Image (cartoon, rainbow, N blue to C red; front, side, top):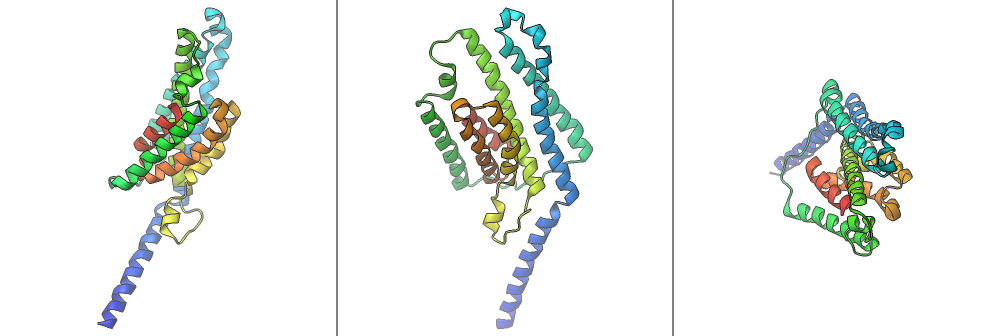
Length: 250
């Protein structure tokens, strides 16, 4: 009986080691480079979305320049959509990108944790905004309907940029997975490599652009939180975008 137990234990250990090796070998260095290229493509797309400003000498004449925000961020939205299509249907197809994900439904405990994190962050941002919904706080009390429209266009543009950032997180995570070896499975599984890399690229860009106004530094570190939410949701882009979108907008 003792020999059988020893054999069973050895078999179990070997199976765990085999699974660990499979996980490490699942992503080759060539694939990591491909994921990094996709992540950087999303970042470059955000940067290139501003090329519409070259038309500023023309559209600044409309309403004596009052419509500049509509044109700048409206063109930005258009370019983001175009670049998203190019990345999705041309670059990804060319690189033959695939994502291996855990399709197991989230447990109530995990779903509650993600909801709790989202709610707490919205509460903190509201506290920084005198407990007002951020859109109303940013627009202010005394403003014109026209300025509200410009703000809506601006908010829509930056929200799409956040969704691009989530895609950056996803691809950076695959590119950098297990780059630092940890024996502890729980530690290894929840290190937000994607969030760190995105924070050092898109995050610095947002900080330089003053995204978030008086809480721009908080927005910088929120990207790291988005990376952790991505891992907590079993790498679900849809759930991560929903959480990140709520935090960013509200």
